[in-house]
Image (cartoon, rainbow over all chains, first blue to last red; front, side):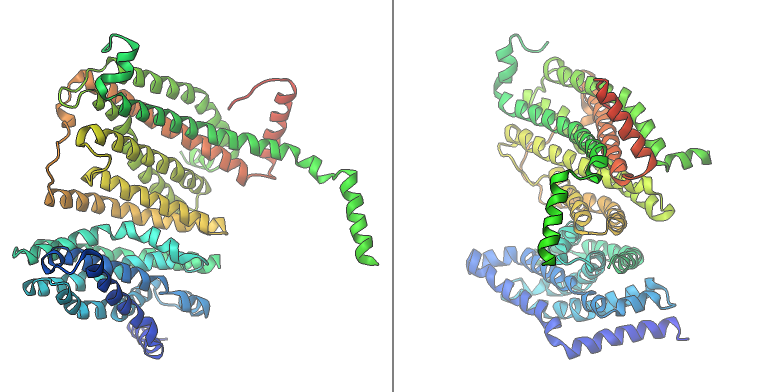
Amino acid sequence: MPGLLEVVLASIRRQLVLAVRRPSDTLSPLLFFLVTIALFPLGIGPDPQQLAVFAPGILWIVALLAALMAAEGMFLSDYEDGSLEQLLLAPVSLYMTALASVFSHWLLTGLPLTLLSPVFATMLQLPTGALPVLVLSMLLGTALLSLVGSIGAALTVSLRRGGLLISLIIVPLYVPVLIFATAAVQAAAEGFDASSQLFLLGGMLALAVALAPFAIAAGLRISVDAG
Amino acid sequence: MQFESLSAALNMAGHGIYVWPAVILTALIVTGLLVLPLLGSRRLLAELGQQPQVADPPASTSVRIEEVNNASGT
Amino acid sequence: MWTFFHKLGSPPWMYRISGQILAVLLPLTLLLLAGGAVWALFYAPADFRQGNSFRILYFHVPAAVVSLAAYYVMAIAGAISLIWRMKMAEVAMKCTAPVGATLTFLGLVTGALWGKPTWGTFWVWDAKLTAYLVLFFLYMGVIALYQAYENKEAAAKACAVLSLVGMVNIPIIYKAVDWWYSLHQPATIKFTEESTMHSSMLQPLLLMFVAYYCLFACALLLNMRTELLRRGRGTQWVRRIVEEGADAGRNGGMRAV
């Protein structure tokens, strides 16, 4: 019988292989990010100073929407082909496998978003000095978004019209992330110390890592039982 | 009593147009919160009370069912 | 002690006892609400800065506070239904959601009506209003999730999980929104602090608080009775109640509760 670590690693590897075979699933949130970012200068005007003021908010709102989009399909294919059921029947703690699937999901959506965010930030005239804080806030924040989004995905995966519902369920829970992450980038852009906001994000992340897998596991059980 | 007349109470020194809609809305919502579930119970009880009659369908419908059966049989 | 819990889980007992409670609580609620409203509207003194618009506070603050408390009631009922598989807790959770959402809505609209004379605009992204807007979304999420599931047993479980997640998040959301608001400190008038309220203003407010809590209890119990009947259709005890109702109807008697 395989150990816990092996199962977790196997489940992460499986997700990554699936993603490599179907790159469009991974790329579409990134493209969505780029396309939506490009809308803002068109909507509010190309004035660099104005853009710089709105940049932290724009970057984070779009990141949030991209995370929402990515969360929607998170468990869908596993649910449809029955591998989710296998996962529930496996003699390993669902807490760990849920955490593993969130981690691989984050590797495929949150991490690329984080790595590309300086490019988009530069396009929006965010001061260069704020870029390290932006990347850090993205690193912590997207992980939080993935964890919270997975709860919504787990609860709605068996529903046919899950897509709209998941935004209604999850967006209110994203509010603190948006507030602190934007504030961190804003503070950095204005030349202030942003460490307290980043610490708060880190604290929320620790809380979410500890608690969210319980909700995800419960949600997956309910969804599989209902379907 | 804070107001000398009814019109003064309605006007509330210009703030009546904000206070009274809030009061009316509160009254409506209170009524709704209490009356809607009561109506729901009533309707459900009435519906359940009629179920024995539904189990014994009126003659006209049974005839129609027979007609349909005949039509499908031929 | 245990027999009480067993009784609490029994629909016929709950239906009967809630009827007895409501027979007292419902008139009391209406009396308290009417008394509180008259006191607040005609006898409480006007605020020296906000004038008479301050009277909206008596309708707004209790609605806001009770709607937040209702979310906790919903989440705790959800937790009980998940842990001990108690059907009654499930019924309570399902029935709290619409009542709480309605009260949140009332709090939001009365808040906007209060905002116009105070801030000069119906909506300000004030910390409290924003937090209550998020609370309203949380309620909507739970209700929409319940509606979306065809399998109502799964729906109740899913909503229980979601409301628990929401309960963990509410303090964080409130702190975050509060902090966010202080960061963007706009030039608005600050409301009078509750603690500095004069007793002539505080007493009707306390009365309204009691009235709103009673209102919540009444609405919850009424909704639960409907839900119990719906779930119990076909069972012996519901059939008996239907027959009693039919007898009462035949005798021309009106049985409200």
